[in-house]
Image (cartoon, rainbow, N blue to C red; front, side, top):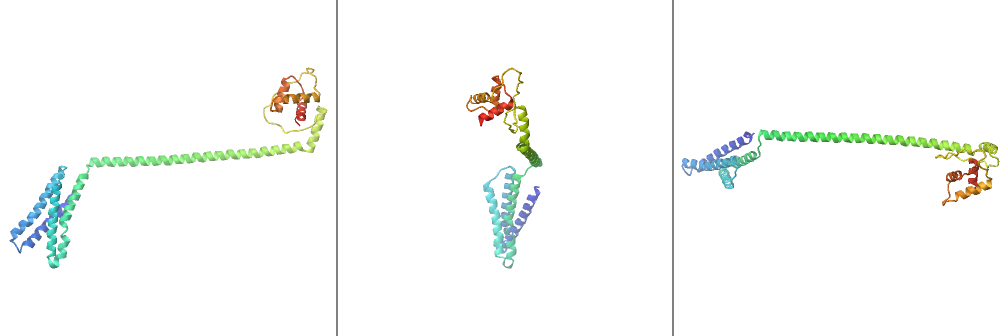
Length: 287
């Protein structure tokens, strides 16, 4: 990996030094002896190479010197300036020389990139550890996403099941309510029919003479067992006495007692009357 950055920098530096030396010799050759021109060119290239070598030594030690860096860039700009000056005086070949005048600056930039790469380079072991950490993080993220998707699917299934169960309960309740409504309607129609009333009148008159026949819908709820009457234990109450007794027990508390509460207290007080007579008395008093 190191060769990918250092080889281009070395190659461009060598080309730049050769071009700088050639331009200096060509530029100063007509004016001074060629050995002098070679010395001047080598001086520029030597200064640039010396500062570059010193920069590389400091970089290998993990150090940096701003003054050396400035001197190296000055030599690079000087070499570029020599190439540009020669290009401006080259006449027809000025374009070609201007095309290569940027090489010294580009060589310095490549060495800068190589230095940055060296400061951020990691060993294979460190790179492997980083890859392992990244892979572990990806695995954990994938597992977390899968867990979230599974939990979401489970919650959706649960909600669907609860909703369906609630709908089934609602449908059963609706059907039961409709069936009960029809049953109560049928029962009430049967009770209110003319034939039913006549039949109940005949039966009631035969069992309890003088009782007013009336049929009420049954009341669903807890009932108190009625103790069996012992023959001759208590005399039968007249309707007037029974009405007065029922009215007295009913208004013994405020608000007035219900029929069930009145009947319980009536039995507890030792009075006796048939359920038909007691209910008839209640209705006469409450009317």
